[in-house]
Length: 328
Image (cartoon, rainbow, N blue to C red):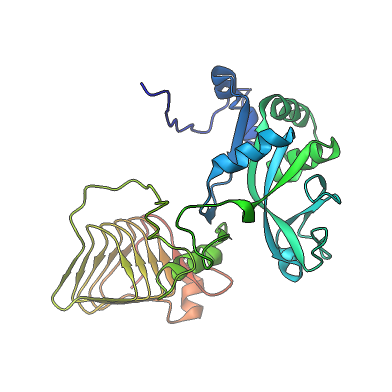
């Protein structure tokens, strides 16, 4: 009724018996949504990053530039930029002249020899240019059909790509400490690290900025409850969770989590519906939805045993997938 909507689009096979071949192909196979709405501009933002941003400012910058695509760039120390896709700009600092994937010698921002632009994976396209690029990419048998790996380099060669400096984005309530925060949480370790920042005494990412709140779905759970001496220290505990005589330290507990009597949970990320039984020990772990840790089970103490039974990240984070039941 208001002209606004959110439509979740499941993976489809609109162009033949094949699933999405990459991020660019996913958009190409979903162009029916673009044709239906007939927008002048299309924003494509990655879903595995954490940041606070006012996208309208980037859209306005794109419109003013007349570019075919605008890529959000975040300033990073040049000696650390090899971990990212790096944007090389022309002398004016706006035109993108090349895109480098994890380069050994990252190009710097003009006039700032120690700083480079890392791509945030956020793009604003002029619709006609996006469709043109997607159609060309779909016919390229050598392409992996990736937005960052194929579409952006293609449009860069066409001379229609500009960079948007994320540092110019002004969000109400931002402080010097959290301004410009951006984390790629596409790996287990980076996901765990980002959550651990949230429970630190002075987190870099501020969940409590009331001037620019994070609007998430809130289930109608009752408040979290601590009974029989249950304790949580330097932790976030979601609604509906019950810590019954257990001890939680430096952890993020989502909604509807149960921690049993005598259990010890530390440096963990626990997703909704997970249950940690009585006298269990869980350290430096990610427990996905509805995971069950039986009474007396031990996770994150014996690295050799953990690697035999579970997924373990390079830094030693133990991960149990959705609905898993830990060994005793």
